[in-house]
Structure formats: C-alpha cells, structure tokens
Image 1 (cartoon, one colour):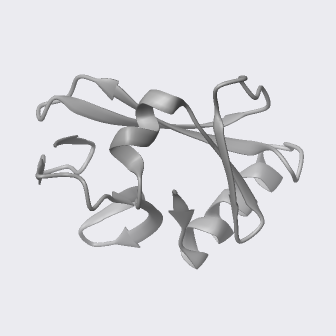
Image 2 (cartoon, rainbow, N blue to C red):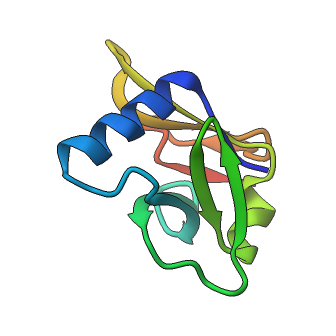
Length: 108
C-alpha cells in the first residue's frame, strides 16, 4: 500500500487546482530502471487506469500503481518538503536499502 502525508496531499490538491485539472484526477506512482542507485521514482497525474493497476485511495487522493512497481513501493509514504534540504515530493520507502544523495533513486 502506498500512502500520502497530509503535506503531500495538500500539495497535490494545490497543483491540480493551479493547472486546472479535475479534482479527482489520480496520481500514478511508479518505479523505473535508472538513476545512480539503479531504480528511479516516477510521479505524475494520470487519468488512465490500466487493468493491472493497484488502486489505493488515501486522504482523498487516488493513487495508481502498476503491478511491478507495487513490489518496490509497498509501505511507501509520499511526502513533500520545501525546506532547506530540498524541495519537492519525497518517497519514504521502507524497502530501499540505499538511496542516492538527491533522493530520486534507490536500490533494494
């Protein structure tokens, strides 16, 4: 299961509103090969639900995760930070054995 923090939820709602997107538009969270640690996170708005997607709703945010990515993302919390240590969405992934310095890629 993938969850969103309250701060991430507020930022997602803000971005949808700012971009004029539908209030119920889902976010897709995925894992792709690449980055300095071997795997990278991918986060985007998505209106297309695939037949093999795992669908979760947390704090009113619909989250789509493909079957392969779910193996890497189980238990992950999507957070948002705008502090001195970086700005943007962050993945708190208990499955990651290491992450790169920027937090954009990880290994299991």
